[in-house]
Structures are given as structure tokens and as C-alpha cells.
Figure 1 (tube, rainbow, N blue to C red):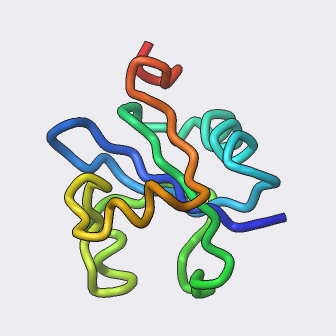
Figure 2: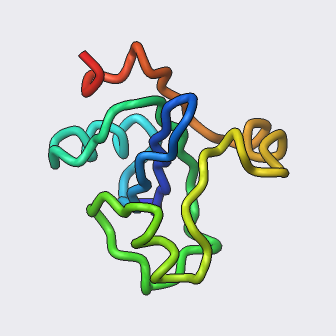
Length: 104
């Protein structure tokens, strides 16, 4: 089992992020849906075992303010990150906004 971070955003706003333990990205996305914490929008996610401190709660939708309270950095949209290309080239999974069942 791996810890994953799933980030949810629209083209204009960061909707929140979820840390969750799963077998792979698809399993993580399905678990977030089953928990009823998928806020919609586009989803990007990647494994974070190497960098995940125990202080991040698992299985809870974290707002930008929640993330800032935990580590001093506000949550941001993936598209606003300066190193976005590095993340896109990694083993990240993506679900586009129209494909997100929460958006339907």
C-alpha cells in the first residue's frame, strides 16, 4: 500500500487535496469517491510515501487553509506550481474535469 496525494482544482481555483492510502492512483481516486469527499474539478495525484509526514490526515478533504495550517504552505493548483512539468513527467495520474463523476 502506498500513500497518495490527490489534488482537485478547476481552471480558476484549487478545491482541496486528499492524502489517502491505496494500491495505485485509480484505487486512490475510487476510495476518495467512496468516502464522498471528491469536490469535483480536475484531479491529479501521485505517490508521496517518500515525503509524507505523519502529520497529514488521511482520507479527509483538506482545504487550502487546512494545508497551510499543517505545513505553513497554502494549497495551490497544480498549474500554478513552478515545477509543474516535473510533476507531469512523474508517475502522476490525472482525471479531467468532465470525466470526474463528481462533476456529473
